Amino acid sequence: MALALALFAAGPSPAFAQDALQPYQLVRSLQLIQDRIAGGDHAALPMQAKLLEMIDARMRDANAEDFKEPKNFRALLVYGMSGGNPVTVAAAASRAVTDPQSLAIAKGVVAYLSGQPAEAIEMLKPIDPMSMPADLGAFLALVKGSLLAADDPAAALAFLDEARLLSPGTLVEEAALRRSVTIAAAQGDAARFALASTQYVASYLYSPYASQFADAFVSGVITLHMAISQDKIADITSMMDPEREKVIYLRIARRAAIDGMTELSAFASAKAELGRNGNGNQDDPRTQLYSSLSTMTSANVDEVRAKLGKIDRGKLSQSDRNLLDAAQAVAGEVMAPVKAAANAKAASKTVAKSDEAKSATEASADPANADLPPVEGAMPDQPAVAASNPAVAAASDHVKDTPAASPPAVTQPAQASAETPASAPASTDAAPVVQASAPATPDSQDPVDAAVTSTRRQLDQIDQLLGAAPK
Image 1: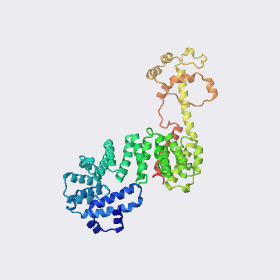
Image 2: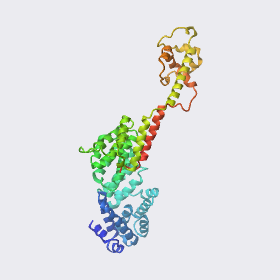
Image 3: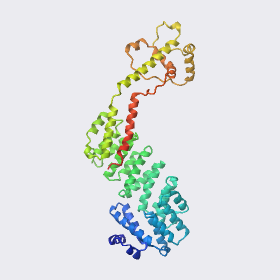
Image 4: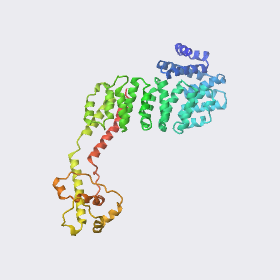
């Protein structure tokens, strides 16, 4: 570390770097800086950039004699996998005189850095990271795990474990844990997801790459909501500082509400509002906004609208103000009355179907009993109806073991109900005939269902309006 600080204080001096230091010394300094960054030392980021610049110049000036030292050639490969320039790595490797396996690794690394994953996988396939020196093997395991994440997740997780074994407490382990969280969630492995998340939060919560972990963790909780318990989620987040914990719960609540996971959304909303050590977040406008969203479809909509109306828009970001507008629009749609014309149209269709069913029943009745008073609750005899109406018989055979679909309930005047007590039960058997013969209408959807569908569609758009994570 003292060497790295001295290099940083000396300023840009390619001649000094070339004459005084070997490539492996510069790369080792880079690794020490990166490990401090992984632990949360963001002040070391400028030092990393300066070292990468100096190493690039040193590698471009290196000759075949420099790379006769195995440590220098390994340093070239580690530099490449630490964010180095693939053009520099390719040019330096072409001048090196070394064994075929090392040259194959160099070609695989260059392919990986150049965005050619298939070629990189093919070149690195026979390489066993555990057989390499630890400084090189750890990076190779990380690269192979990243390359295989999509095609062979089980093998990818095994390589990421090897990377952690070979380089604990470093930026390599930090990256391996982050990738493990994502792969475990995609595989539905809740136990592995929880373990990797716990290990990451315990060691690397303040890494500059922790925001990527947060994205992966929130997505994983949503994906594994049926497999991971709320207690386990609470155990992991309790290791975070209160502000990070709150933001994580806000994001989970928002995602869960959008995806219709009411129980998870309510849990996360409550956790976000509760805060820690009695320091609640009820006054945080983001908390109010996301908790309202989580209860949009389950709580009293009047209460939700009132809560949304009290939110201070001036304390929200532009994306959150857009979200607030969308939430208020959705609440308004939920409370809006169904159009009277649509209701009347639906009712008239139902009444028409009921009249048709009644006519079919009366036409199929025995003429000898036409003048007899109806018996309340009596059902027409199925064989008699079938004998007098072949169409009913055919329909009866077709739906013999299938319950007839009941028409939508319609409120009838009291007089009509008293005058036709027998026709209502009779329509149970006649309904299939009427439904089969009734012409299909494109606008036959129930207006209430249409309103609910529209509301659901607007809820789905909230996630897109939100954009990035809460700031």
